Image 1 (cartoon, rainbow, N blue to C red):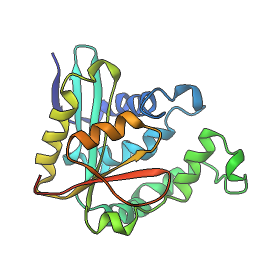
Image 2: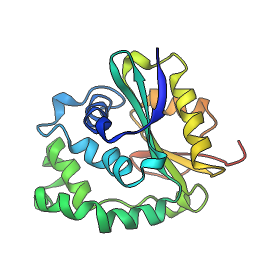
Image 3: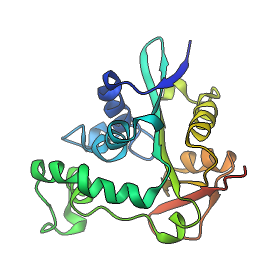
Length: 200
């Protein structure tokens, strides 16, 4: 039986593992990384630890199988990460800025994001201030779990316009968001930004 519940500190390691297992265009990224926690350092751990009231997990008979995390206000959140999250990671990981971008390993690309996080475009945050990340292991996909998880998260964050960022190569992910009322935003770049109005 699958259930959705609030994140608990004991779930953190499983969430790290899920972030890696779904981190390559929606599929497993374990073969790309020497450090298995780099994905989670960026996409799940700061939310789960700093914004736990907006962190949900999916649990089935085999354990934690998915999560939804996010924030109600993206701009203050990115400022908070600069104060409370990135500094300790920057002490642990060397800045790979001296390595040309096209020569960086997957680990170095994520480490560069830790040292030089890209801000969400203002065209996105002005209209859709909230955002979330949602990841499900294959065993819980295509069963309605994602829709239910998204619905509960949206109820938890309140009546907020929300956006999600998707790698343009992740066609399945983009299709998921589009089917749930998220519209593609005309912002160029590798990330496909999608937004959903609060009234939906």
